[in-house]
Amino acid sequence: MQYAQVVSGFMFNTNRVLKEIEARGAKRIYLQAPEGLKTRILAIAKELEKHGLEVFVSCEPCFGACDIRDLEAKELGCDLLLHIGHTDFGVKPRIPVIYEPYEIDFNPLPLLKRHLPELEKYKTICLFTTSQFLRTIEPAKDFLERNGIKISLGKHTRSGEEGQVLGCDYSATLPSEKEADCFLYMGSGIFHPLGLALRTEKPVLSLDFETGKLENMTKEKTRLERIKAYHIEQAKEARNFGILLTVKPGQMLLETARILKKKLESKNKNAWILTMDQITPEKILGLDLDILVNCACPRMNEDFELFEKPILNPEDISKI
Image 1 (cartoon, rainbow, N blue to C red):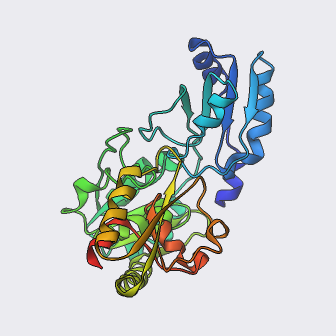
Image 2: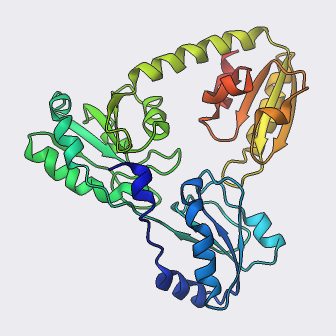
């Protein structure tokens, strides 16, 4: 069973959402969902309208709970934002927000059985996943423990869920840093497992529910670290720096951008703070820049090939 097939089975809990909307006295709703659920968003809007609600549908890309479109919602006079698919990231919105999660019913046991010989090399494994696949944690834990592998689980500091990674927040994995021999991500894509791999010296494995493959992130981590070191060397000789600042409420590092500008200018570099919502290469075409400094999503520097320029994170500036 592939991830794309399971997403289509997502069930919207109309009654639960309507009760919460009614409790808040909301009448005009701004509806936001990630790309994977856009195929369902019109049906959800129509369902809400049947109950006398006025609904506006956001067509902007949504990259997580750090990407709340509360400004548009407020400008449209909405009194509530319904954000589907992500857990509260701690952003302070301009209007009330309901975070409506969705879960995908996926049985991880066939894949775990297939890759058990590779997993048995580790005595203690820390499991982690996203909110969509939290239900896979317990059956995976039971299966691996029955096969002699000790399982380590930590609770996320915001959600309180065991084994949950939330955006770029890996707090659920921190308690396992010493005791675990490796980390095992269960889900789809490499964004989350690679993000953890760049933060730990322990092996990080990714069990991809879409491809069925078990992949070690070490090779990709090493590649990115070598590229980062090369970009830092380039930055030492560069003159013109563009500091990328997004206005997304959960990613906007305004004070960091100001501090970096001063640091770069103290090193006799030219630096400009460039603001935008979604950061894309075409928005900086024509600007005479040598290096980009990312004050948005910490993983954006992996997109340097799209921008055709080195991208550094704030902590890298002290190294140039």
